[in-house]
Image (cartoon, rainbow, N blue to C red; front, side, top):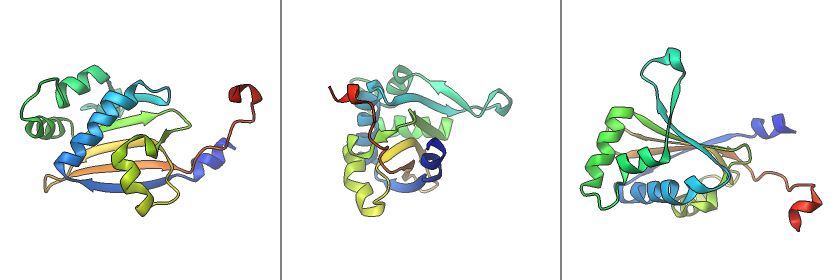
Length: 151
């Protein structure tokens, strides 16, 4: 059954303006990073022989992208993506519900009816200074057969 879930993966690419992207980052870093389905944040490694991705702590990401009382956030975010190219959020096997983040809740149903849970969310800055978000996921996981989980 696990292989069946992996086969039903879908990829959706969104292009967001700066204000909407900042809202997505706020929700991702300040709300979703503490949830049980959150796995890790990572950035691409410079040297591939060490592995493709390097783990980035939530604290480091918050400090680099959205510092408390920070000014010139657009500039900071652009500089982060100039340095690191991409930011990747990975979630546990069951994934993050698309409805957890308002930006995704409003955007995804119109573009993809089958994308209900996100396994990987990748952010990047394209050549025209637009923010691209790529979601990889699929339908909602089947309900648990364990009767103890309902109590």
